[in-house]
Length: 306
Ligand code: NAP
Image (cartoon, rainbow, N blue to C red; front, side, top):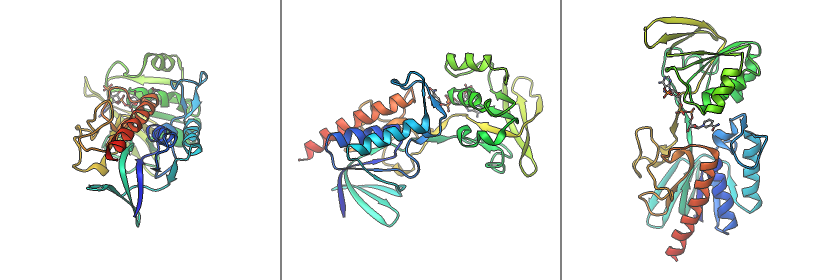
């Protein structure tokens, strides 16, 4: 069986940084990525808070730069999802498709995905007006009216991006105050195309072949109103991609891994980085930091094995 010193699972900013550090540390490393490198950062239109880019940088461009940098130093990429991860006495058995690989250490960087709300019409109209990715689908709604659900950084940032195409964007938020960073809030309030709908939650997505409107409910009065919209973008937080771990390590209620700041888990040789790790601040910069920290821990672990 193919044996590697280190396998990194996931090619978002955390995994790609781990790939860069591991390659520069001359570890025999493989990085698994099932789609396009960059994870959620690659689906973000513009990133303004990653240092070194005073004008900001497009998410896909930053992702490709990180991927190129890891590969330039010799990190090997396998463009495949991982089907299972098992610990045995020799290390970690990784299966992907019909193939297997044994890694002495693993850095898990599988990140997070958008949460679904579970309201009527959400699933039925997914791809027909309901979306979780403004960068992917925003351009379909030129001159349309849109609703963005949520009040965090993602909702507000993506609502602003959508105003490039749409004539009007409602931000439907369950409280009377946004959770997003103040600078983003101010930009949203200054944007004439954005109209907040406060104290309101999404009750139903309506339409025939595609989305034609949403029913939102005021949580104080219980009053419902219909907003005529062509599309709905849902940004109500994320949940962890922790399926590979099954019962291996401790998870919180949303599936995030409870690991230490040094990224170590209860399983020797298994490190968890980026958005997958339970943490206060989920950003590209904190994901990248985790990737670097995990490699130094993996190196220590590997040298103790020798
Ligand atoms: P988030 O910060 O958890 O915000 C989720 C938003 O959805 C909150 O406003 C929340 O309302 C609302 N919400 C949650 N459940 C809901 C429900 N069932 N019904 C209605 N509304 C609901 O998630 P996020 O915006 O996706 O961001 C995820 C992480 O990525 C955060 O750490 C964020 O800072 C980071 N991020 C950063 C940037 C950036 O720095 N530019 C950009 C994107 C994401 P409440 O406010 O009432 O709880």
